Amino acid sequence: MKIEVRHLSKRFGSVEAVSDVSFGVKEGELLGLLGPSGSGKTTVLRMIAGLETPSGGDIFIDCLRVNDLPVQQRNIGFVFQHYALFKHLTVFQNIAFGLKIKKWKKAEMAPRVSDLLRLMGLDGLGDRYPHQLSGGQRQRVAIARALAPRPSVLLLDEPFGAVDAKVRQELREWLIRLHDNLNVTSLFVTHDQEEAMEVSDRIIVFSKGKLEQDGSPAEVYEEPATEFVARFIGSMNILEAEVRGNLARVGGLEFPVTGFPDGHRVQVGFRPYYVQISEDSMQWPLKAKLRRIYFLGVAYRLEIETEGGLILRSRMNKEEFRERRFEVGRPVSYAITQFRLLPQEGRVAAL
Amino acid sequence: MRRILIATVWFYFGILLIGPLAYLCTQSFQGGVAVFWDEVTRPEALHGFRLTAVITAIVLVVNVVLGTVTALVLARQQFRGRTLLSGLIDLPFAVSPVIAGFMLVLLFGPDAILGTFFGTLEVKVLFALPAMVLATLFVTFPFVVRELTPLLQAVGTDGEEAARTLGANEWQVFLKVTLPAVRWGMVYGATLTTARAIGEFGAVLVVSGNVLMLTQTATLHIYQSYVDFNYVGAYAVAATLIAVSFVILVLLEVARSRVAAGAA
Image 1 (cartoon, each protein chain N blue to C red):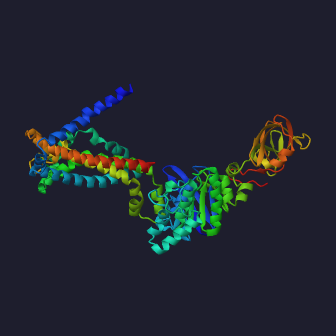
Image 2: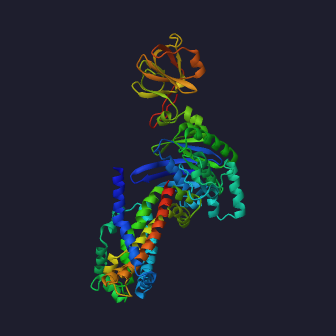
Image 3: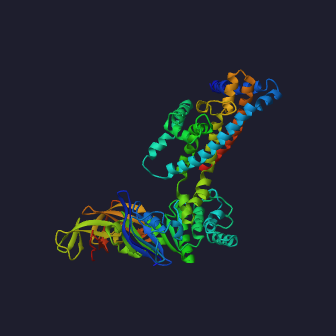
């Protein structure tokens, strides 16, 4: 393990920002820490960096316990959300800052900075000042500055949070390529689940200071370990149902379940693309009315109201949508092709 | 309407600033350049200039160093009584310099505790340089702190943290990151301090005793010359101080535009 965190916790006064979090990061991995704001993910990152002191637990980098090691000696590179570039220094001087502090020889410093400028696509910008750069360029300077002294791990706090959507997309793809090239173990914090999915080898989901799930993007998406993850990652229809005779019933729908006593309440979840809809009222067994159509770019989202008064969301790709004749307010038929029971507090449900 | 407003402003400036300044300049050269020069280079006047320069230099160094430390603590640390201290910073603006001087006289007088203490050490505080420095420090205290504290808060801690992650120790963080970010604010505060220290009169008058050739600063010399009906002497020294103030004013403008540029 490159980084290991054991039973880490942090209190700010009476607020427990992080409680009993444990996970590991393998050499060369690109790990995403995902959660809504205030979930403790940034605090975890800052504790690993040494910018925040843990209230409890241990942090290991390269098998060395670093709790008592000051930030200067942890050999980490840190990238801040708002770049935190030194405004009075040029791009070159910014990137060389850490090398100067570590007393690199001039003859080694200049080629190192030039290499990084090329790697970051910042050729010819070495003499500019930060205020003369675009947001995306600034963030790449910040990453170059963090990488310059060859840190053993790279920590990024909401690295693309301050740039606009288009640049964000470019930076994401660029970060993936950079990581493939350099293979430096990297942790990045994000509140954007799409970004976490796209960029990470592995995702750790946080909520209210607790670790909710630790898994690959596919695992987190397909097999959410907790109700929070199910609600937070992607879009999901979630219905609260009551079990009677091995069927979870809600609003006229019946989902087969086993192992629950009658009267037990369960949560049934299914992604919108597991809801099939047809304008032919005979094609699928269940009946509903089409309430709204949303255009999403690559697909359409359809909102239906079932006979039992439930509102369900369905997703349909563009091609299929165009072959059909949907009209808002008209009756449709539908089917739910897959569902899962959401884990409840303290227990993981079996399908 | 617009003309009336503009005329009013001209009139206001004329009565308050331009008129007196012009009159002062013409009056100082009333007897010709030679007389002006004689007045400015009299031993009493030269002593006054020298004393003012010494006090200003000491006050400038102490105020910039301690003012910066104070601003750093107020902007970066959370501690009990922080709000109280922040509120007290403006106190010297609200208290008349004469009262400030009077407080020092009470504190360091021969019957007071501090006065007795320094008396036994045979260190002369009152009616000597130390008290004059203390009085000037009191009235100039807010300038650096007031300029730097909000600036440090606006600059934030991101850059300082970034420097630490790159291996910089606290001293390097201050010299290479914090100081460059607020340097023009510091120059601005230092310039205001200098201007105020040169011009200080009331507080210094009370604590100095105004002893000729001993504790008489340039401003006290002007006052003394005026009282002694040596108007040309008063005018000449005053005009010299005005010239210095003008240079400081120019510096002030430069510093202010740099602070504004840095904040943008």
